[in-house]
Each structure stands twice: as C-alpha cells, then as structure tokens.
Amino acid sequence: MTAIGAMLGLLVAIVLILKKYNAAYSLILGAVIGGLAGGVSLPQTVTFMIEGLKDVSPAIIRILTAGILSGVLIKTGAASRIALTIIRVLGENKALAALVLSTFLLTAIGVFIDVAVITVAPIALAIGKGMDFSKMKLLLAMVGGGKCGNIISPNPNTIIAAENFNAGLSSVMYVNLIPAIVGIVFSIFLVHHFSNKGEKVTELLEVEDTSHLPSFASSIIGPLVTIVLLALRPLLGIVIDPLIALPVGGIVGLLAMRRGKQLKECLSYGLEKMSVIAVLLVGTGTIAGIIKNSTLKDVILSGLDSLSLGKSLIAPVSGALMSGVTASSTAGATLASASFADVILASGVSAVWGAAMINSGATVIDHLPHGSFFHATAGAVEMNLKERLRLIGYESLIGGLLALMTFVCYTLL
Image 1 (cartoon, rainbow, N blue to C red):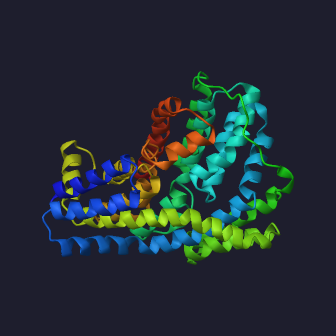
Image 2: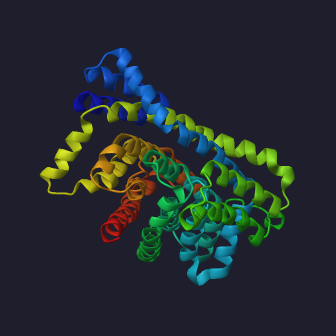
Image 3: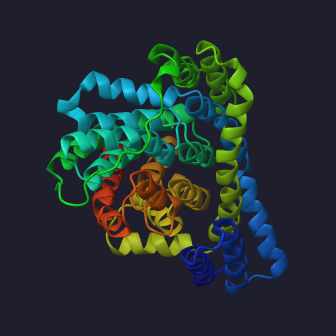
C-alpha cells in the first residue's frame, strides 16, 4: 500500500476532526479512504483495519478496567484530598510549585490529565485571586505538572504504548521518571518566569466542601497498592497484569477510605470516562492498521536518514506527530506504537524504551485546539480562547523537553 494513500486517509481524518465530526468515525472513514487510495481492494482494506483493531484490543480491555481506580480517586474525593494536602503543606510562598506538583501527582497515580486540571482548578483560582496571578499563569502550572505525570502514569496512553511494544507497564513508567522530574523543575521555572499579564481571577468557582473528604493517608493507599503490584514484575519477576493491578488498587483504596457504598457510583464514572477512550481507540486502531501496512514507515525512515538523524528518533517523532494529528496523547500513542513498533524494534531500540519515547513524544503537541483537552482545560478556569491559544507554545516547550529527556536517557542508559 502506498504512503500517499495512507497519508491521504490520515489527512481526511484530520480535516473531519477539525470540523468537529466524531473522532472515531473520522478515523474509520480515513482508514477506508487510505486503503482504497493506497491501491488495495475494499476487502483487503477492511482486513487491514480489523487487524489494526485486533492489535489494540488487549489494551482496550486493560484501559476499561483502569477506570475502576480512576473512578475511585475522583468520586470518593481522594484526588481532591491529595491536591489539597500538597498545596497546604507547601504553603502560599510556593503556591505555583504546589499546583505543578498537585496535577503531577494526580496524573501520575492514574487520573486523566484533563480531570486532574479540573479537580485542582477551583483551588488554583482561589490561590490566584488571593495572590493576583493571571489565569494563564495558573493553567500553565497545572498543565505542566499534568504532562509530567502523564508519562509515568498507568493512564491509557502509557498502557497502550506498553501493550503495543509488549513491554511491562511498570518498566515503561519507571524509565520516564528522570524526564518527569526534569520536566517538573522546568515547569516550575517556566511558570515563575511567565508573564503575569492577562485576565485575572475576579470570581471564584464553587469550592467543594472538604469536610466529607477522606484522609490523605487513606486516599493514597489505592494508588500505592497499584504501584506496588506493578513493581513486582521488574523487582521480583512476579507478573501482575495491569488488568488486575489497577482495579485491585481501586477496590483496596475504596475499602481503606470506608466508602464501599460508593462502589457502584465509582464503577459507573470510571466506565463512562474510559468508554470514551475505548471508542476512540477503535477508530485509531483501524487507521493504524492501514498505516502499518503502507510504505509510510519507509518514507519517514528515509526522511530521517536524509537529515542524518538516527532511526531511533522515529519513536519520539512519530509520537509527537500522531498526537498532533489527533490532539490526544492517548490516540497519538496508539497510532504511533501500533504503526511503528515493528520498525522501531527492528532498529535496535528495546521495547521499553520504544514505548517510553513514543509516550513522552505524545505530550509535545497533544493540546491543539481540535482536541478536547484544549477546551476542557480552558473551561476549567473560564479562560477566553485568545489567551488559551497563547499557552500552546509554552505547553509544547514542556512536552518537547519531556520527549528530549527521554531520548537523552535512552542514549545514555
């Protein structure tokens, strides 16, 4: 199948997504057009699409079960308690650093990055009003922390990248720890030196009553159990699949907080959030099947060779490009890992580092306006479109540094 056909199908999907058509259907239609334009028959096109979907189906199951932990953290108030504790401990003098660390920790333990920002936003606005910070400064702090947490978390983007490379989830999370720490330091530096111009906080969002929230100690038990279970594979050779580790962590956390009566509510919320991702991955898998069976990979490799760049760069570059196409780190990591894993592994990159580089690369431009993250985060702080657009370059700096640091760690380690 020709590279031009695959690129045409991808372009059709991008245009439809930009026009606000359903992303999953846009990707499926793009896959059909890509196969036909690439020179294969309709039956063969459908076969490639189904093969692509089969490649991501194990990850879809794991992502659905991951919703249990996410639902527990959000619906019990555990996520809010964790954020409030970090901000209280660091105090007003380090308020911006506290916002970075709060969203970092929430995403690192398995909360969606947009949900993490929405959770912390009311607290951030209260801080901003008291200290006269602009909304842009506050949102940049939260997004920066969230991006750093997202590359070491058991979130869908990490799960799908690890799955497509057949790498251990905990190992993929672990090797991105140094880039995440560097990213945190850079985010705090960037936010402190970011201009305080722009719209200031005039009205506060309603802050939830914190009297009903669980304690910090009980709130953190669920994520800790999950991390310990996932760490058994690299430490002791005991394999606990994420399909088991994530829901077990959620259930243990629920019991530790004595919120067993909220189980149904947590399950419903988690399934609702993860179902959106699962449906998106169906569309993403179909077009990944087309790309994988086309010569697009060879074109990209030739381009890297002509620029005298190593073939190992295809991992972060493909992650960045595909996340920009879909404006989603999850969809970007899916497309890149499903389409290019074989080529990356053949170039000598290990499965763990290939997945890690794609995962960090997927944070570079996943915040573009045709995706939901851009609008959800703007709505979280009631920011106008013009100011939200101004943050894109700074967000890309943070994502770019994360991708660069993962590549540097790969070359040095």
